[in-house]
Image (cartoon, rainbow, N blue to C red; front, side):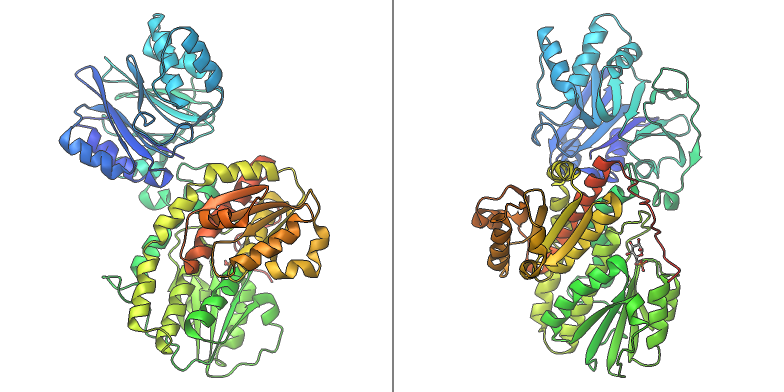
Length: 605
Ligand code: G6P
């Protein structure tokens, strides 16, 4: 993660950089910092935690200068602290970095032997130290940066700024994204086009191994072999920026990372202004509904299965779920007191559309839970509720899944209210709890590095099992689907209690078994089922919160999740299962965004 920005401006750049960092804050907020060159002198401000802290500091300690770089950090090497915060400075150079310098230990030792001291625990500082060392040997800033870049291994996007150089910035990318923005007498660097969106629409995407010498007059770009490279200038309008990779390697990574923001925005939309009441359309009325049918395909179907628990628990509403391709060919028994819900990201899935057409006229009301508002299912349902996930480009659905869950959860609350199962106070409590959701999702995203490590170990296997109880059971199904569809590892999801009725025969010391078990009222039961797996030497990976992990006893692998209210656990635990699939796919080198044999919108049955 981490977001980086650079500006060679015509005005004070610190406020501009701060604003651009805000658009990158989804990439990390362990610390933030800005460095500028003012009248030839390099200076910096760094703070721990979110950008707001940096913004506050800048009020009291402004940072003048028309050239600057900035960073918002998601800590990898070195704990979140001011001394580990970027920009890192050594001598006359400051650097911001996104990615990991894999050979930094060797480089650090070499620099230490040359008598150069490091102040932080980061891999990034080594880059600054190397550049400084090169400059001490008499190299120009450009030569020093180029020579340093040639020595770096790993994945990185870097931006350099130099004391004494008011009109120079160097950017480099290998593995991590970096774009150049072209203004009028100004130049910009950013982790993605979105970061620069209000500053310029004219963007150059650097390619793997590119590095660029940037002045206010323009950018000279060089490829990995040091040859001058011509990279196209693209016009990226804000709406277009919403459908680029946003600085991520894959759309899937971007869409997983977007979930806190998506859910926050969807909550704003579907709740009253003061957040104390639901603001669903009046047709979403369950007062006389005696049975709800939820129909969908793929990931939407697992969202439906999960929502069934909520409609039953919160509203006491009989609820059934069906796969659209099955539903349309059965003879489902429907009455005018029934309501039917059709869940579809694209709103175009042929089987779901056919199922909708099948029930029209037979039920009291059809409701769409849809991402694309202009789609067929949105148009043909009696009322369509937008999930507002924004464009989802990756074939494997991630943010649409949790956004579907959110809208279904709100519907379940509405059903509880309409059916007299939830008092106004209880509803208000639930809505208040929902306000914590974006923060909890962010906390889950913060586990990415650990999940990537787990996924690396998983990458060599051909089979995996997921298990969970209650709402964690449909999530286990979704987890298995994610892993299958993008990494091609065969995976199955099971209800924890069901494992002993057959699948336990698959357990041996080579079988990874992911146990999705927040510390809720079903926890002890799930742990018993987990013990049955451990007794047969299964490779258990327990996803639970600290309390759960402490109570569960020894397991081969675990992932410490944030403590979450039980009703919110499916949202929060969706994040690590998505990331697990993503990193397993990366490790196996599969086509993450466009897995083989699949399509995003399935318009054939
Ligand atoms: C395809 C996609 C899945 C999606 C399913 C249903 O199979 O790959 O990610 O869940 O279609 O799509 P829908 O647009 O109806 O949600």
